[in-house]
Image: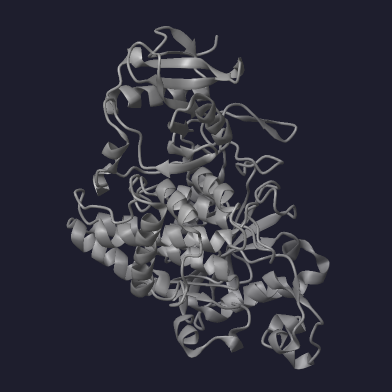
Length: 583
């Protein structure tokens, strides 16, 4: 029997679908926080389009009074993670003349119709008895809410911005988000603090856009190194206002770590993959890797292919929890956390967009942006003195290097022993070498003796007959702590080769290299992905490689069906049994 839920308006039980849950939650919001009575609200309302009633019905309509003659607000709702339906809402608003609308999948987007086919996002809808002007009360920190689906907000803004020719969507929306972060970090120290990042409905688009652009200038001045001093917001006044309005109600810094990270990655590329062969590491993999190498407060962490910063942010989160347990005084704990972020976290990437994203991610999690650099991590001869001084004697490296593309520049290849198949004295340099192989040696170079490395590598490197020189390098330079074979779908839909996680510890000069020692070996059978690359959650099944079953409400990393957590716990037990010094 299908599970039921009581409809607050119809007064009867209805099937508890994901869409119905969203609808009932928003109806409760209308009653409890906007002071509308049940008698002013209707569901499944037919909309008259011209002379006929539209077959599709509005999910919720709020009326001016209990007579239900004049509609005031139309609401279109979707289940969690759905991002369609905004055009449908606009068509209903045009047909009825209603100026207030809401699209929601759990994260509501409030709409105001300015004229036919021209809409703007507003901070809220009026309560019962309120007018348009009443919405313009100041926003405070306590008014802001955590966001559950930032991707859909960004997609909506992208669709609006696409109508303006000649602008780079990524750069422009990122400037607005950067400005929003500045307001939260700088101006919102108390719950009663007022937001400067605020769009007033009664202001013109020109005045509203000027407010945001001035705030962006302040952000550039305070947080140098992300945008050039002469960069400005290039969006027109309408698009600047629209994008800022879409973000103003949310507290980005207080939101879930994965919600923000996923949205940042979606901004860089809609397919979550760049043109340079990089792809983003699933968060369940990142979390397991960090737990398995257990970074500590006094240890430096580096990712030479940092991308959007997933490994670095999870390392921060891991150490932050340790600091919180150590200090009773929350002010002192925050001070120690910020100091760690600014002094111990390092990242390089050759994609300037990803460097911007990573720096912003670092801002959210403790302002560790100063040690994120736009550089080719393999060509260390091209590093400036500051980077060379920073990126050495590293305690821990986490990295998922790009797999595609071979490096052919002799001047770069000559820096690596593996370019000579491990024997530079032979003077026989290869014509080309794949990037993961060079990255492996580069990680060895910058690690301190006793330092730890977690690297994602193609499984072929561990098996191919022609790659025996790489395996010899591994055995000579590192103690191999563990090898975890990842399930085939782990990086779907972006790459199909099977991959492995290698956990290594660089030998110290005083270490005795044993021929025979125990190595932790595991194979992941549940990656949390199906053949299409969709997340698979607990309670769902795979049939012929494809997921079957409903997604959980408010799904997060803990809901993903994976065995990596169990593997990480077994690895920790193994390390303790071996008396390894990082547990």
